[in-house]
Length: 568
Image (tube, rainbow, N blue to C red; front, top):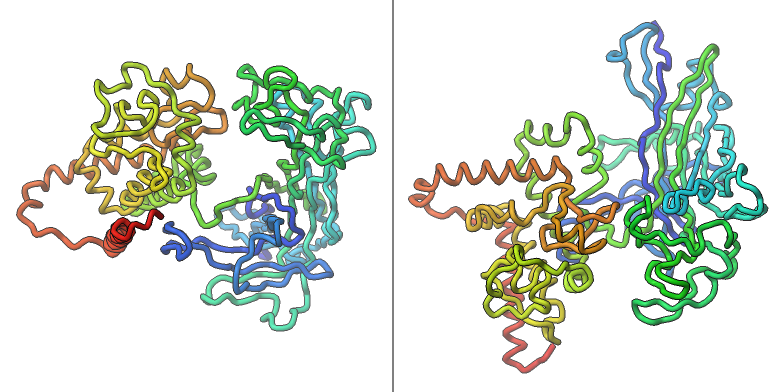
């Protein structure tokens, strides 16, 4: 019995686009678990197969020799491709017997269909100002939704306007104006192979993966990262932070309606959208406390829906594209990723169960601490502490300060009297030789912990310290909740906040898996303590040896400079 299309879906169902001012999209790359030759991280990046657009709307797979993230001062945008896939099977067959295949013009033809039977709808919205004020009329986007035929291969601009239900005189985007949110393009399938391409498939180097240039694809190109506002926002304003003058919006983009309700709005702690201080004007005191300048950006969330019209019915599929700022550290992995967040919301906690069943907990824990180290290397911890360390109450203060510690503000989090501080590590004051003592100490310690052997040694030496240091998921201590937005103790991760303004934490499944690992390690260590004392010490890992050599080399250089009188 012939197989027919039973359902359609978009792969991936969630895509991330990143703003960029350049007209050249970012080439593809992959993360590789290997020491980074350009930094101290454990992750490096390598070029991956990239689809380059051709003039007629098709794509050409290429493997770049190098990676380029900017064109002059303009950042290259990340412009994701989305593929249309189908589950095919015999009529009446159970879904378990269906198989997933990419949708191509040939597959459509075999089912008596063509590109004209495919319609794509794009609904792009920016609702930041609307959420902050609780005013639906301040959202802007594609009104009405943008509809594109699969036979249309030219880039289609995504132009945002205010809702048409809002009276013209009250619309934030005046009639006749719009905010460009990017482009949407259907990719033309090639029936004839291009030169140097092995038929419609391109074989990759490993001989396993393939790039199918016949699959029906769509590309989402985000906007260029501009700001828009009322005429007031194009004037020079003074910032409390540094006293400098700046104009938040270019005059050519200062056309929004000042009376729409966003300019001068005060999204304080009672705002329905938290954190309340992340809008233009929050740090300015020119028109009263924290007035909004009425500025919006050209990020958005886009809902892409595909409809395949069958003779007697239709099939649908959907995906979401989230537009975000550029990634300024593409060779560093965050310890808390979108995948981690999605896994945490899975009803059966898939990632935790899968990791436990495969017996890969050691590998997962080491990878987590490598990601923590890569994150800490991006932070100026000294600055973050000055800005966000809470003043500790008596129950969080030690009776005496860490002996010899010269950290400023000893009564604040991570100061010399913080109960959570390791009293074995006094820190020097800020100086020309050590301008960032907290930052250097944190990087050195997390470098050691990012090796599984170093982490085991740490837990063996301080059995309960990790439980005290790592913040429980969604936990905020009483002094943090009353001290103000963004102020935290030094519990890990310190001085970082989540999207709601509270202290940032691991996800539930990450925290539970980590603590299960600690518990099992301590149990094994306790039962094997006597045997371990009688056994010779095993050799350290290659990674630990490499890090030991790096530390010794750095100490040797420091001592050499001191003997020569070199102040650098």
